[in-house]
Length: 447
Ligand SMILES: Cc1cc2nc3c(=O)[nH]c(=O)nc-3n(C[C@H](O)[C@H](O)[C@H](O)COP(=O)(O)O)c2cc1C
Image 1 (cartoon, rainbow, N blue to C red):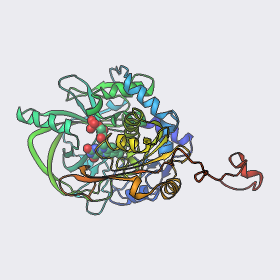
Image 2: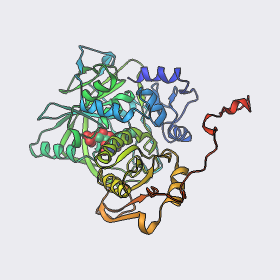
Image 3: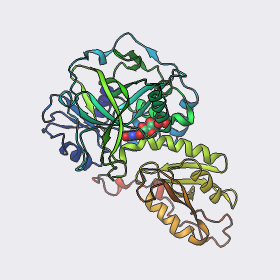
């Protein structure tokens, strides 16, 4: 889990350790943001607390590949394999997360250095908390990151943007039952990636997906006050219940795309126990685009699957600038004249959040925005190749559309025509360029 990840990051020479004291209000977030939330940082001294904080852990795509032991080329297939072949987890009698069990006088703001990130955020927020619930019908475990507003004492507000979970909560409220939850902090990239698999699409136990991804059973312990299982090697676990029928105003909060949410009443969680390791590390993720990369990696699996039913898709990139949900670049091997447009249809139909897609040939690097610009400006004509679908369903996190969540979608076919007799689209190349070793010419150059 997290400790092992920190070791791995140290060995990769990627972990920054901050020995200067930081204020959890704004300062900690400012340091993370300086590195665009892509540099893992361990803050050893946080004002007002003896507890260390780790952040920026899973915001860099290439580093996340390394932590998951995948490569850009094999990632889609490795993820698909784990989703298609979930493996059993293992229940163990105890684990480090149970080194300390607190069930009385729980005062979260006093126990942990919970940051306030942005100017107009209503309160401190737990932003990396992994919510664990058990499906009452199937017994499957669902994990998902949700944001938790710290209201004081042992009370949190929870924002849930998932129809499945919202419906479950409403059903429990109708029966005046309280839903048992656990919130896990201090996990690794594998646990995070498994959580991002959509429960609405797949309905699989996410602990089992995690076990398949990590190649060994995820070790879990029983909670103390709720009937749930949590990772034995997590840093901190908050156990609790959603109180039926109660609401408290949540927000404003600077969200994924950097805009503030409107305050609105949201359900309350009452924490009944806190489990933590000795000298626990409090995990944060800055509420921003970068740290949603794992969410994007799962969206890429869905996008790729949707495309491969129709075209010869090479690779897909759900990009950071679009919050890992609104924008995608797709590379295809064009075999028929209509492939570019078919790819647009398949892509925009794959997920309601996707708002913009650019389809290119496989000689274009979909991880290089300059190359995409080059393809759009030299291989497309707006009147023929920009396909606009007005007023389709969109994401609530996009402030540019109207209040009903209705948004325009656009697909850009930037593929060249199949027939190119005059060689207008032949890319100029320098023979030998790919193999050049620049250090031969400039021995001291830093690359
Ligand atoms: C860093 C990070 C933060 C996230 N924060 C939230 C959040 O505050 N609220 C939310 O509903 N989803 C959030 N998500 C997305 C959900 O965790 C994701 O949609 C979910 O795990 C998918 O599972 P589901 O289909 O069961 O909802 C976040 C994802 C990441 C990677």
